Image (cartoon, rainbow, N blue to C red; front, side, top):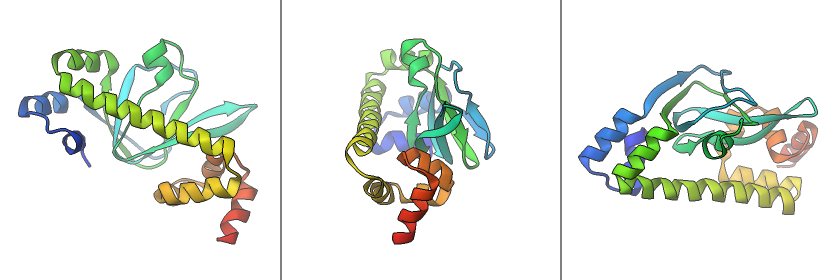
Length: 186
């Protein structure tokens, strides 16, 4: 879904608001395997994924760990940089050919002031993102590996077809061998 369709799915923006949004969000295309944000860098951009799959990752004890996946019709931003003016510990990688719509957060804030409906929309988006992270934390804390895999299968089955087993295993907090055993039981 393109950006304007996504916006209007939730709120019927005016023609002026749609035009402003379309002009404000710039298009960026990335090839599969491209690093969009390096770990420990700084970015003040907000991203909407029109096409493709992003992997948010970090390094722990020399190991590459997948923190989260972001696919089509999703907003995301490097929260540490945007909101706390700190370097972003996470890197972002395009796992497929990816088309993003991008805006600097300062420009988005200007839109919030001029168009309260845009601010209301992004408040809802922020709550959705917060909920997604809370659910992941709940599954990591209170569910075993099989339950985490079953949840991923239920909530995001396309990720299983689009990401490598290594990335999926690290996202679930398990080894690739454990993931293979779980998948073999299904």
